Image (cartoon, rainbow, N blue to C red; front, side, top):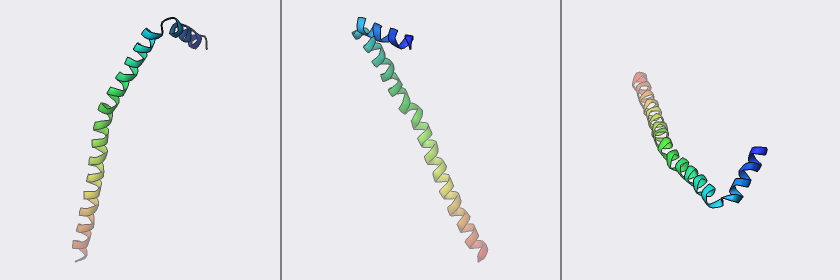
Length: 67
């Protein structure tokens, strides 16, 4: 609680500098996020593709086994 009050007091004293540093931090976080998400999305897509291919081959092998 006291920490929050102190932070608000500093923002009132120096609004420009504080906001700039806050924005820079937030901007950096936003820039980093997509870089972390891209490989995860690619991994999920590859896993889904592999899963569908495995199901397809599995059904094919089953049909050939029935024949």
